[in-house]
Each structure stands twice: as C-alpha cells, then as structure tokens.
Image (tube, rainbow, N blue to C red):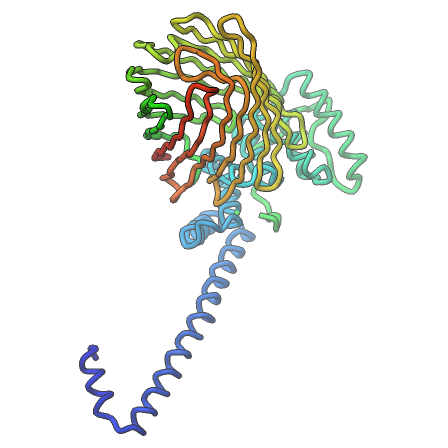
Length: 436
C-alpha cells in the first residue's frame, strides 16, 4: 500500500474505526521494535556461541570465518580482533596474525595479552630474538603468568647458542620454584632442542587489519607568518614498509616554499633492533636545491626499553647548511600507561658557535584501534626554518591520525609558534594515508 492510498484509507474511516486503526498500528510498531531489540542480541549470542564451539573443538578455519563476520559487523570489537589474531596464529598465518596484534598494541601498548600473543607469533614463526623484548615487557606487566615464563624458555632455547641455552635453563629453574605444580620439562642439558610451532590444544578462555606491512601518505601544509613575512607551504609523499614489529624502513619526498624560495628534499630512514633492549634508528636527507633547507642531514639514535613501559631514546643529528654546520643532541624519556603516552625531550643545539637548549613535552591519547591525538608544547632553542638559524621559540600544537577503516586514515596538525621576535606562525597540515 503506497502513501496516498494509506492516507485515503485512513480518511475514509469513521472516528471509532480510525482510533482502532491507530491503536493497532502503534501496537504493531512497538511489538516490531521490541522484537528487533530482542532478536538482534539473540543472533549475536548465537554467533558468539558458534565461535566458541569452533575454537574449543579446534575447527580453526570455521572459527576464522565466523570471527571475520564478527569483526566486519563491529570493527571496534577488540575481543573479536584478539581472538581472530590467535586463530590465525594457530593456523600458521603468522604475517596476518602479527598485523592483528600490532593493531591492537597500537591501541593498547600496555596490554599484556596482546604482547604475549605477538611474542608467541614471533617464536612460532622462527624469530625468537624478536620475541625476547616483547616477553620482557609482558613479564613486567604480568610476572605471575606461567605462560609467559614458558614462552621465555622456549624463545631462549630456540636461539640455540650456548649463552641462550644457559639462560633458558636458569629461567626454567626459577619457573620450577615459582610454579612447582606445573610441568617444566622444556629444555635440558642433554637435549636442548624444543618444539616452537604453534600448538593445537584446547584453548585458553582469555582468548580476539590493521597495521599493514606497507603504508603510503600524501599531504600538505600551509602556514601564515606575521609581520608581512608571507606564508609557507609544502607538499609531501611518504612510504614505509614494516618487516617485523621493530624493523621498518621509511622514505619521503617533500617540496616546500618558504620566504619565496622553493626547495625539494629526499629522506630515507629505518629502525632495526640491535638486542633485546636496544633499537637503532638511522635517518638521512638531502636537498638538491638547498636555498632554505639543509644541504644534507644525518641522524642516529638508540631507543632502549627500561621496563615497566618506560622507554629512553638518545640521538645526534648533523646538518649542513649554506651558513655552516649545525649539530643537535637530544634525549627523550617516555612512558606508556593505559591508553596514554607522556614524553619529555631535551635538545642541545650547536649552531654558528653557540650552544642553546630546548624542551618538548608530548601527551598522547590512543583510541579506536591505531588512532591517536597528541598535544605538544615546545620551548627554547629551535631552528627557524631558514638555513639553520636558531631562535628562542614557543610552540603549541595539536596533531593526530584517525583511521576511517582498516585501509584509510587521515592525518592532521594545527600549530602556533612564536619564532623569537622575528614572527609568529600559524599553521595547518592535512594528509591521507593508505595501508596495504
């Protein structure tokens, strides 16, 4: 019945018949709404029951299919993402499982279950050295979890050198004392080899895209300068490829216009783990037309885990400008807690024979998987964007990255900077990121 016929039908009714029709319509409407509210959760419960049955019976292919349905219907369901990552790892789909765990850790860096899952994937896929720093972080968060101790022993024994085997035996002895009711026959002096493949057992009840291996971003920025200094603008394209959770390479090309001069810049860098605690960051850039930017620059930094979700980074950058060299040393201490990150950076800049100091404070909030927003306050010595000239600055900024779905994100930044007595700068930037 279309709208006009319905209106004609209602008008033709008597008052009594019309009242009865309205009452019946209201009753049908509310009954339909009630059924919708009741039946939808029942279907959701039914799906969850099917997932649980498939997981506990070891039917991982079926469980994966059902979990993908659950994730698709509710992308914000972290438990579904977590269980899906586990099921993928049990099927030896390690690369996809690793991406799933990395996505969850971008959202909750201090979640012990996510860290343990990622460490398990690393051991089972033959990368025990990559797993060790992850296991260290889990042990700091959950020292009483026997599964963490078991994986620690497996990872050390899988490395299979003299030092690691001795360490595995030591950890195993400590585990026997701590958990005497459990079987700890994992490694022995006579036979150190162990099985490190993904298990096929009855599953622990605690068991749930994103950070793809490749990401590319294009964007630009615009800044207005006070005192009739004009404007700055820039356009860029960047790319990164992740080999493992702590191993990646990145590169970028940028073209800028500042004070009426046009520059181009190429950048290449990467992160590489040196040990359980240390990660090396190397970065270099070069400008073929250095009118404002540096002719070239190189950075080296070491990032170390201090335990309890504390991280310390120290580094040095050397830049060559038309006006001469500039050296900058810096140190950053950061702490992750719940959905937040707090960081402080101290800089010492040596330019034109003068050493000056600067300070930076960052506070970040992580939400909706890998999205984040960061508030920054910067004060003290900083380059002014022209041939390495250093100013006493004050900067307030807000920036973030918001993932629209598993493949697309937008990046943005708003900032106000007081560049000594030279000028003030108000800026905005925007980018679009694609993960694949």
